[in-house]
Length: 201
Image (cartoon, rainbow, N blue to C red; front, side, top):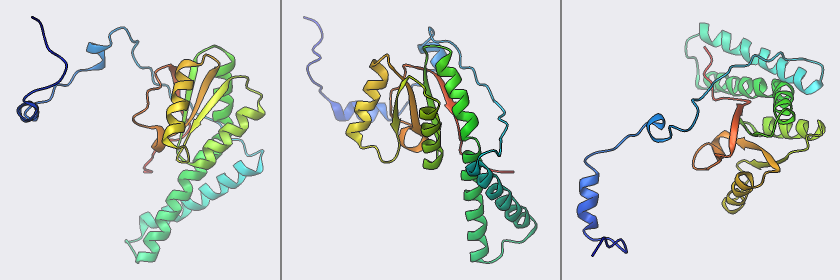
């Protein structure tokens, strides 16, 4: 009597039938107890008081000039296109570096004002390094984890468990590409994107 759930039968037939349709459920229907997402765009004022930010801003201006010229030119040679793409990549990284100080201060305030867990995402290693160093320099008491492209799968799993279960670990510094998918970090209530993938224009 009852259901036998110890194994499966007719798995090939089930697979064939499941390929014919897909069930899509919305978060609001499945997880109704969760609050709605709130997105807030925060403009940051970039100060050129430190040398790193000043260098990033001049790199950004230089790349911007190259890109402005590129818009007015034809595609040009292969070398010219490569130079334009390189300028674009430098501009992207420079814009992230220029926001390190403001992003770090914002995250520091979030951690100081409450006991909520915070995730900070960035793309470039220099940005992640800068945010981590600034938060240490600001003497933030919260423990943190960091997951980037150098983190092994075993260590990644351990860090996720630490973030989820340790109340003292309140901050996750994460690479968008290394930690953007497949990790359960639901203990966080605030997510900060210090950098985003971007397309200028």
